[in-house]
Length: 404
Image (tube, rainbow, N blue to C red; front, side, top):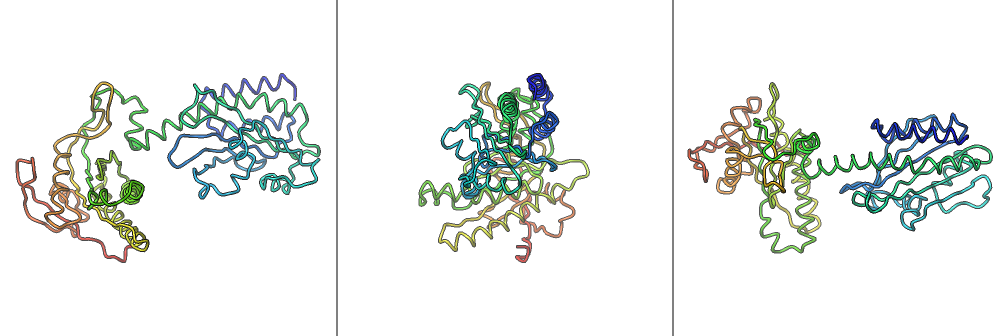
C-alpha cells in the first residue's frame, strides 16, 4: 500500500468520525478500503472498554464475506467465558502488552491461543493484535484502550507495508472509537441512573432547573415487606443480594410492560406509565403487576431452596397529573415527578398493610381501566394521611397460579 493511500484512508476515518459513523459502519467500510488497497484481510476485530454495570466492553468484528457485527464482553469470567481470558486480547489487558504477532504460516507449533488456532484452521496465515492507550485525561471510567486484531490469509501473511499501514491507521481509528464509546457510555449511564425516557430528555438538553412538563400518567409505588428486619439480621453482602434480587423482579416487570422506573427510595420503587391518547396504559400497569408477582413467587421458591430470606411487595397504582422534569437546587438536580398524585399514591401504598392487600388501586385508576374491570374489588372508602377527602380504594384479583 502506498503512503498516499494510507494518508487518504486516515483522512477518511476522521471525516467518518465527524459524521458520526458507528463502530460497525466504520470498520465495515475501512476493511473494504484496505482490501481494495491490497491488504489480504480475512478478519478484523476492534474492541473498546466501556463504563457499564454489566458490560465490560464492545467488539466490532468484520469477516470477509460476512455481515459486520457488534458483540459485548461480559464483566465476569462466568459470563464472558474462559476462552476470552486465554485470548490475545485477554493477555494484552492483563499484562499491558501493546503488540502480539503470530506469523502462522511460518510457525509449526500450536500457539497458546485457541482463537489463533481456530483462525489457522479457517485459512489464516498471519495474526496481528495492537493496543492503543488513552491518556489519563481522556479516559471515561475504566475506558483506557482500544484493542484491534487483523488477520490475513495470503500465502505469506501481511507484507511489511501492510503492517506499517495498519499501525499508522489504528491510532486514528482508536480516536474515533473513543468518541463513539464516550457517547455510548453517556447514554448508558443516563438510562441506567435516570431511566430511558428521563435519560433521553436530559441528553436532548432538558437540563435547566424548573424545566418540567405536566403529564398524565399511571403512577406505580411499590415497597418490599419486612426489609427493615432484613437489614437488621442480614450481613451487608446478604442484604445487597436480597435487595438486588427483588428489585430486579420489579424493575424487569415494569420495563417489560413499557413503564419507566424513576427512582429507588430505600426499598421502594417509584415508576410511571405515561398516558397517551388511545393507549390502554392501565392494562399495561396491571400486566406489570402480575409479572412482578410471578417473578417474586419464582424467586421465593429459589431462595427458600437455599434457606435464604424471602419477602414480597406491596403496590399502589394511581393515575393523575404530575410535573415531570428537573427539580432541585442549582448544583444538584433530580429528574423526577412531583404533585398531589405522587403524594396520594405513596399514602395508598401505606394502606396495603392495614387492609391486608398486596395491591391497592385508586378509583381514578379503576375508572380508566375499563378492559380489566372484572378484576377489581372495592375495599371501601378510607382517609389517607395528608389527603383531605376520603378515597375509595380497590384491589386487583390475582391471576391464577397457572400463569407461572
